Image (spheres, rainbow, N blue to C red):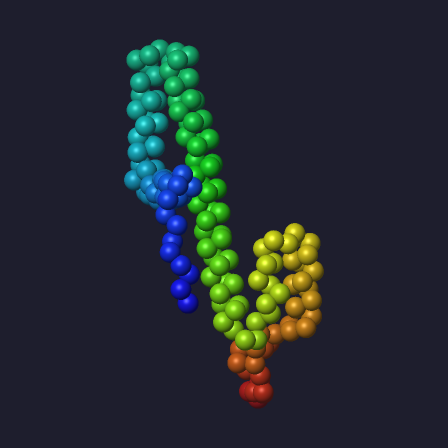
Length: 145
């Protein structure tokens, strides 16, 4: 099935690409090493600057700005990942004839409704399909004696 031409323009697309790239960089082990080195260099320069207020303000400002911006970058990345995962799961639900199509929009429901629906499903089908193990044994098989 063809989904049409992808939209790749505009500020939203640019921000998404930037957020994705920055989250990849931020999650890299070398980024952690660089952050530790910055802190070590900052700490070592304390005596040079006499542990002044401006010396302390520099690291406080830098960490506050980085943290503030990373919140938005991480949230954007998580939102896109969650929506992509939901789309993939919806596609699987459409492809499996026995699947309950009512679950395709479950991500829009509140937690209480999701828990209620899970309880209903568990009550109707407490065990996996017949080709899976039930109570540790295959269905229809008896325990060894």
